[in-house]
Image 1 (cartoon, one colour):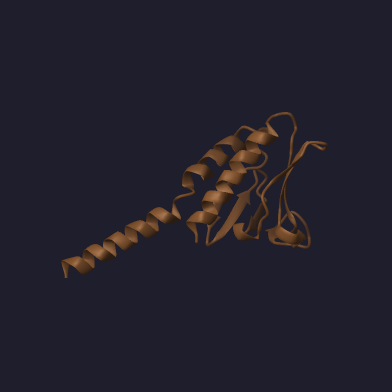
Image 2 (cartoon, helix red, strand yellow):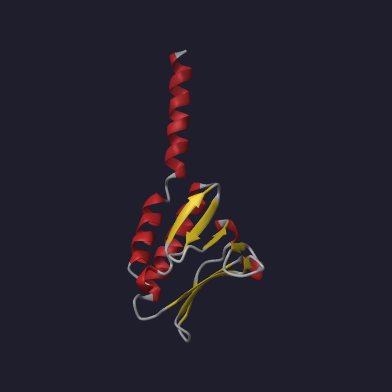
Length: 133
């Protein structure tokens, strides 16, 4: 009986740890977002298998991370694109009437470094996806 209880507790502990593997990367990303563009981009959270970006203005965008391509920097326009794979409308948002977008866009207003944001977002994406398999 002790063996079964021990096995149950070990399984539970491993599953709990696995689901939080991305938390450090999420915290790093959110900490960075606080300081850019006067906090405009708000904070990311994970809820019910969705990644949600809660903007400072009260709006949101949500998506499943597995539907997103890796972020891409567009130096010509000073932007970072975090788009849906295959240009699909995989982001649900309340920013527009249709309620769908093909990704997220971060525009550099001089308050942050695109490469830093790229690294933080990519690290969060990779660790999140590896923890939910």
